[in-house]
Length: 351
Image 1 (cartoon, helix red, strand yellow):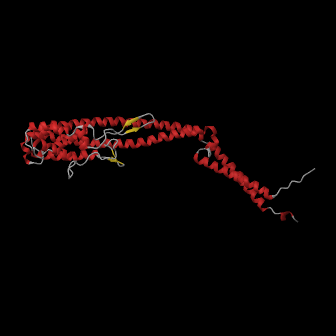
Image 2 (cartoon, rainbow, N blue to C red):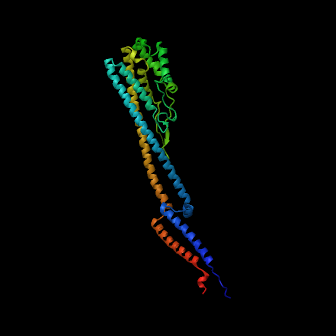
Image 3 (tube, helix red, strand yellow):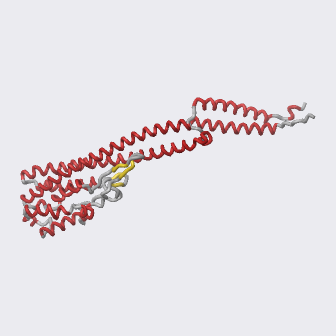
């Protein structure tokens, strides 16, 4: 028995519209793949290998984050090196004016002014900051390493110097009678009471709230490095001691023989301080090279991971272009069929 099958234009239209929606989705995916170079739906395409792709991308994000941090670290160290260079020049200038002054026994005002200027420069360089973080404060990077020695009211350091001097000599440093202080008494003061002001405990209490611990940074997935130095370094303290003994002990009013004692001591401390700065700079330079080498390794790892990810997620652009062309042709044909179906009418067949 033959059964009649009825085909309506409505059912044909629905089928065609469904086909168009499918073709549009495939075309959109293909265009996305052409634009990104990746599968439109990585999970659906890779299946069980999706986890490998995710793991590779996590590794990529991690090492790129380390390199971003390294960029900041290198900038911090470059600024630290610049500050130390400036301070080394300051210490050299101070030494240069002390040398002729010791030989001639004159120029006390010039020496005093150079000492004050040098002390101010020391404070300025130690208070160098980048993005709100103090470079020479160690892990206490949000704390200003040094107060102004010449502030009014006096800083804790300046007050400690004045107190020690007054206790030793029975007069303040700005008293004209300091001219009576003998070279031997001044040498004793410099070697004992004054030197003690720069001990670990007194430096932390009166001079600088910086941490002894430098900033430690992760420069690769397997390496960390100390990437800063602090205002607590012995070389910095030696320079502060040298500048202060001239700037803060009534130098201009001392008798010439006692001035000689002060200048000799200051000259030695300035020399030691500058030598220490060179060592600090050398150490930072070694660390800078380590960070640069780590970045080179990261670049190599990024290249390898990129190739691995592309091998999993990448698409053949030539094949995708061909697919887009085929889908566009099919879509145009589907649109044409839909248009014809929509124009069909029973009246066309009734004569």
